[in-house]
Length: 188
Image (cartoon, rainbow, N blue to C red):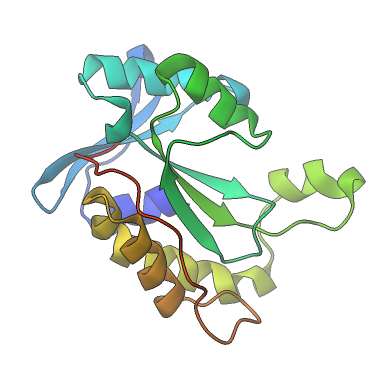
């Protein structure tokens, strides 16, 4: 949803199926940067095949890849970004790391935990409910607005801007953010 919002806001072309990338791509520009938006069409735990194929074809370095993903260990509406790091049990990230290494950008978009491990699968695979729109739509808009900051390599400014524009439900002010990772030159 976040990738679609970015592509739409910046006037990317329509998504086209690309067999060589095992996914659908849309091309566009964010500022001066050419950007390839990739939606892998593999199983989630095989996402690395798609990301690796596109990265190699376009001769990108891992720090030129930005992965947007949901995160149950973050409260709904919280957004965190960094370059490098672990996979925290996320099979899609594990696959990407296996195919391109660990030094890619991750944007974690909090969807909250269902409270019970037995409800986890249904929680991550189901559609958002009407009440989720109260935090989801402002969060997606904020990510779109702040994304150029992340592309410039300023994760702290990106996270601060998102938190300012779309504070997570129940928060009264934006939380401080962590250290800024090294810069980026674009993204998938």
